[in-house]
Length: 337
Image (cartoon, rainbow, N blue to C red; front, top):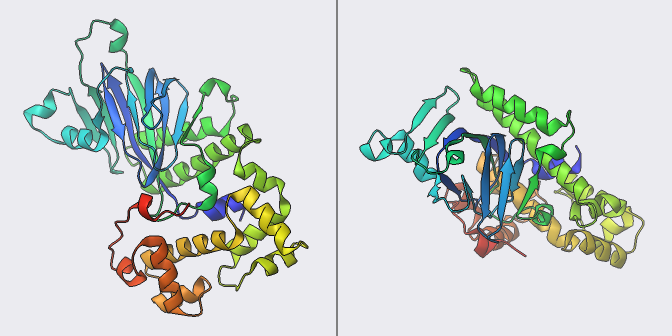
């Protein structure tokens, strides 16, 4: 597999909603453990980036992508009030009088996703505020714990204008496929998930190509020795890698590989190796693939005790506790820099 596929295998994509909004409205999205995207199918709206205060203007065909950990608001205009998207969902699913004031119309589909219509305030002075905005929202769930080193190179958000995409750009085609599948009465979670996962790769590739001079990813692909070293580690986590053995395989000195590796990824080879080993271990434990001892060997630890110590440093708890499902971890506390 290519490197992007390797490092993305733990990320799960899904369509959160396809919505039709009218009046003045706003939805607030928390992204502690997820990345997300919004595609505007019709109309226009604003996105408020809560960490920077910047407001983006989105129109038909535009896509905005937010990396994990960056909260934001999607709203009819910059001055509109927002409610938490989970609160909105609970209100629209309620039959209380309070819910009715939102002018709610919801159709629950067999896929479990919902098409929602929101009209928080139909009585507006500005006729333009009566216009309908349609969009698809998706999310990518990241595992708890440290983000893969290469994903830290992503900006908190990036905006792809639909007008900048070629007529046959795969991003456009994937959005059309996701929208069509979502609207089917027999919509499939599996198909939606696969399409959304594929869209993630195309979005990321688009960003890499547009930001060649400032992306860790672009630097990585331009340094073949570092790329091959990373692929070797990703492919054989159980091997007893050292900086010396990685450098020797690339025909470089230890110091040269270490320097070039840090220039590209921002961290050293052994720190990178430890982080991807722990991510793999967490996936295996969550899936119930063998005992802790088996997981330790699979990711390159001869001793389950040393593995447990390393795991606890990253995740803040022992593997056995993690296995019991107690995985509420503070990313900010335990994410390494």
